[in-house]
Length: 98
Image (cartoon, rainbow, N blue to C red; front, side, top):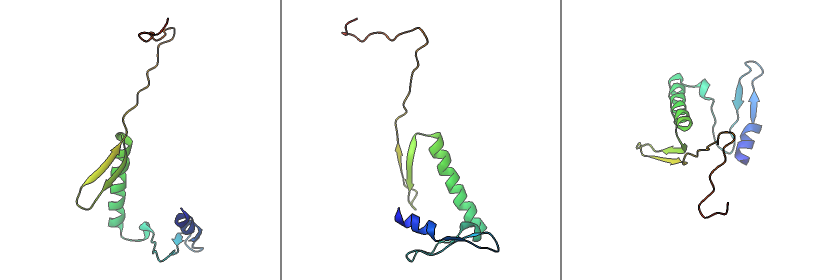
C-alpha cells in the first residue's frame, strides 16, 4: 500500500499540456498507456473488458490466467433470499413447540 501512495505522491501535471506524468519510484519505470502504442492500448482494454464482463455476469470473484492459457477461477456460491408474501408466516419446524 505504501508503494501505491508513493506513486500517487509523485504524479505531476504538465503545465503546458495538462497531461499527467508519473515519475519513477524505486527503480520502477511507469509510462502512461495512452502515450504509447495505440494497438497495445486497444489490446489491454479488450482484456480488461473481457475480465469485467466475466466478473459481472458470473459468480467468479477472482480470475488468474497464465501465458499458457491455464486459468484459476475462484467463485462464490449463489445466495438466494426468499421473501414471504404479506400475511403468511413460515411453517414451524418439525419437533418445535407450536
